Length: 306
Image 1 (cartoon, rainbow, N blue to C red):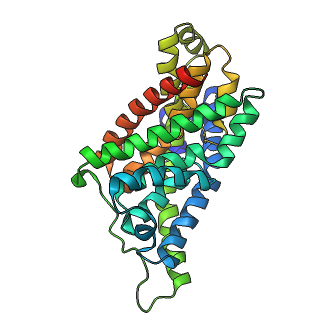
Image 2 (cartoon, one colour):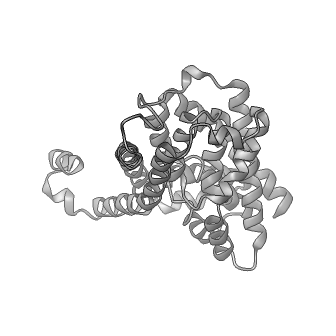
Image 3 (cartoon, rainbow, N blue to C red):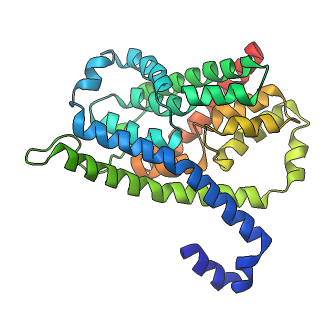
């Protein structure tokens, strides 16, 4: 509604039927609808964690040493079939339950990239090339663990803002009531930032001509950097990004691997959701560092395995 009012004010009613605006609208809605089911999954898991899981359950399962908890949390991402939209509210709940932020952030990055749904879709998108799925698994696990250790070493608590909401069971309130309230809060809070990220990604899709994309594919290093940035702005769900990567046949396998490693860890909607959940100081620093680490891990995995 807000976008429609702004459009009418800037360009008149005719802009609403312009092919460029219609394309922008289609992409924005498609990204949002693609991500909403997984955001719903994440907020359901988050609400269930808050209401039904004992407060010390995760701290008992993970190693006591934070440095050892990071790779364990990274590997735990294999069991959650969701995209990056689902991982943000879950990571928020983990921190609220006493899990060290470094481990929660390692899980946040690995879950969308190494779960079985994503690995199977990658294998299907690249028939006859199982090494693409293997390289994606290795690079994504490495990048998530490295980011967890980097936060453990240099992360500052003052960068991290948690919403002022008590997590866990409150006396006098039923578990299902807590689940409903927690789910409602997390879903409505994250959905707004998801929509903002989808609108930004749609703007890039419409504004950048195809000829620009083809120009970058001719240079091995520029192609890697370009596809890394493309993954950030396209904000394609991790369950679908392998098929888009497979279609970019003019780019090298390593560049396409980097696209698949970066996308689930850093994209516009994820940055917006992180900013809304953990605060802008955290989101800007964490996203910039994650982008660099993901590119390096993707290139090294591509060099060694492809």
